[in-house]
Amino acid sequence: MSQRKVRLRQIALVADKLEPHAGHLIQVLGLGEPFRDGNVGVFGLENVVLPVGGDFLEIVAPVKGNTSAGRFLARRGGPGGYMVIVQTDDANAERERIETHKVRSVWKIDRPTYKATHFHPADTGGFLLSVDSTLPGAEVTETLGPWQPAGPDWLSQVKKTPVAAMTGCDLSAPDPKALAELWSRLLDLPLRQGARGPEMDLACGGVIAFVPGRTAGIAAVHLKAADKAEVLKRAAAAGVPAGSDSVTICGVDFLLT
Image 1: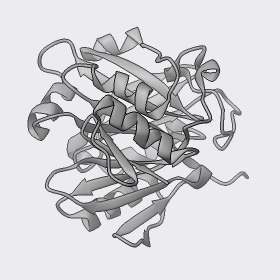
Image 2: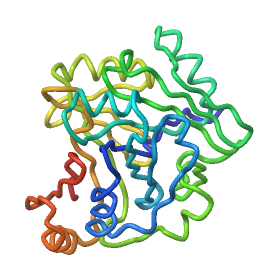
Image 3: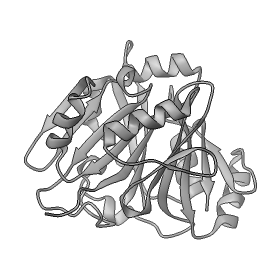
Image 4: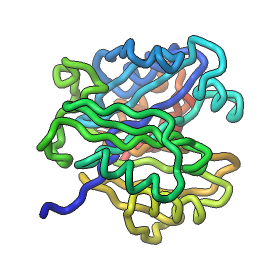
């Protein structure tokens, strides 16, 4: 039997409007043309999805009142990291296991080519968590493996520079240890002690770290930069806040490694 795999495949950010944040991701990180998924209209949202190597960054923005994304924006008081999407071998089996922990699902899709479940933020520590699987037999660890939420032509938009890959994220919470233990149960993955707190290793070298923060949110996204100097140069030209090893877009720090 093959070993069970869990891969960090997509991070969603939320803002009241897609721009200027989508443009900043494209300009500063050197990403390709975005895919706009009309299907997110069922959630009262519009979006863009951008490939970062074989993984993805998404921005969603409410276009109607009383949406989950809108409530998250109100709680946070501004744009930020909203949703973590992991890819597994069998999303339906994962759903059944996660629901045994009394975690409620808020949306499900069950197609032959794609399966996914969104879990209630109140049960996951304040984050929207989605557990997905794609084509039957698809290898989770295939770097450029199929990913339906990114549309039919995303492979043509993959760039190798100045940013080459997404390698992890930092989830913040007032009690990061408790959040880490919760996510360890939900994803059925062990924790280890990292430099800043608990960390969880995923497939393809991905890491989720749990760090202190005033509220629950995706504090940072880790990127493998083929040309860090070029990213920082682009940030300066775009007026995007930057440090020596990071840029800040849509309320999230993108850490360049």
